[in-house]
Length: 403
Ligand code: ARG
Image (cartoon, rainbow, N blue to C red; front, side, top):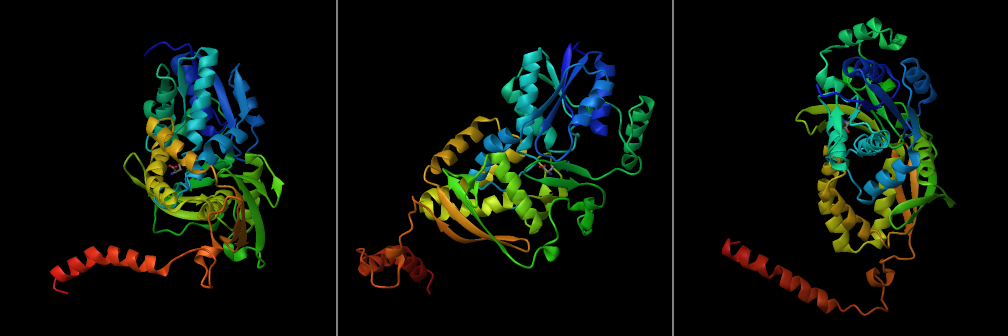
């Protein structure tokens, strides 16, 4: 084993990363710096400081990354209307490159040659962390304790904790809990009974959205303002990116918006079933498509839709910091120059629907589309010729087939 002087650990303060912290200190006999990011997971972060201190950590970093997360990661992704496999809004996928970026930054600052994370050996998150670190600083080694130690079961994990006097909260003593990952964009829940896709998810897995059945019987109308593809206001009130997403999470949660029960294909090769709650993100996706509908040229919009699955897959697979993602991002960002205006939506029992849209840069022409007599020159004979030429090959084809 190479001698390491310092390791920067992505640390939540929870049981698993507390065990990892101890294991790193024991295995490498070196200083461990902890990094805890506030991504809006809704958990108190100060307890993480106390726990790290108790484990003898001298350099404890707790950083509020909410604005950076939404501004530089979530919003750029939303400009693409990104969905993995048609449905998943990528809430966990998009958070990992940000955490990796800060792990690398701290490592460079304190002169550490390694970073460590608590992702398991079967999931996507290990790829997202490690590919990002590779892309940002190839000199940094990544330690993934879950792939290295010989702890193979929950029982062994708890035994290790007992042996090293790491406090195990009572709710973590019994069988394995759900695996939950939360941030400002989503909450994802996997494991336990959810591992059987035939089993209906119990109500209590949902944490930030009400059941649409229990949502208010009166719809709520909201207006979202966009500038160059990014949301900037709610009901006329300007907000920072994180404040705006927080506001929409509240509204969406109350109306039961953004629940998803999904079986997806992990990059590593297996299928997995998870429950996602993405209230604000779901509203924003619908609203963004609404503003694009009047501001984007048809070919531009269709090109975006063609590359979207590829772009989403890159993020899902962990290639945020990769040249092809940056190339696609440049294309997407350029398309957004005129995506400004306002979208009004109706929130009602699990759905967010666009009911009106306006823009100073609209391409929509009522004059052109109207069924009434129009002032704009549109010659119906042009349509006749257009159809005749488009039909030319179809007539040849049908004649050859003997129709
Ligand atoms: N399957 C999701 C993804 O790969 C979520 C992964 C993390 N979630 C969790 N509950 N551990 O993006």
